[in-house]
Image 1 (spheres, rainbow, N blue to C red):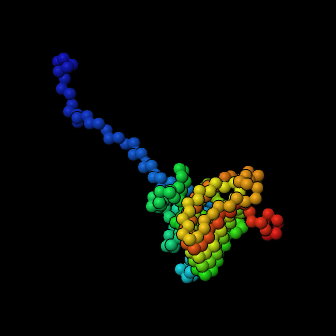
Image 2 (cartoon, rainbow, N blue to C red):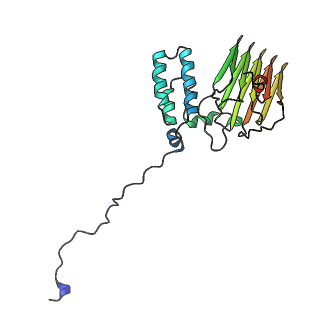
Length: 240
């Protein structure tokens, strides 16, 4: 019998083997990467201020404040900061919250909004931010029959651009920016005054500090908003 005539054993029909290679891991979204981002001491201090304000308003007991501060100062990622203050009105939020900002206050390329706008409300009183305070990227000020001073000349400002919204009603608001700052002032005085004043020595800063851009919107109703440059006179004279 010829070799070709030898009956061949029945074999199962060849079928393609399933691909046993693991499926590629899903790539993290932009928000997920932002939540994993390592945070700085400046950002921890910003959240610490939120926690202290919440305790002062009665939202947190002092025991809760101590526990959260302890957790805060050991936090390493932005997502941990969000979790620590998620139940507080001015706590940090996921970066996608920036989508709700007005177009003129959208962050620039590569920038992330770290928290909702903190608000300074003044009525028949005064508030000051002086010295080495930690400045948020966005600040809202509502002053009625009071005085507010924001001094950025010695502040820790971890942002290239800062946004400030001011409403002054029968009030006096002073904003002091670094000597070399770039100021975009959008003013709306109603029987009031909104002005920008150069400090002594012009707009050049001999220290070579990075240039910050301040976007300031001011509405003054029978009130006054002043934007000044350079350190306070007492600071220049070494009196404080």
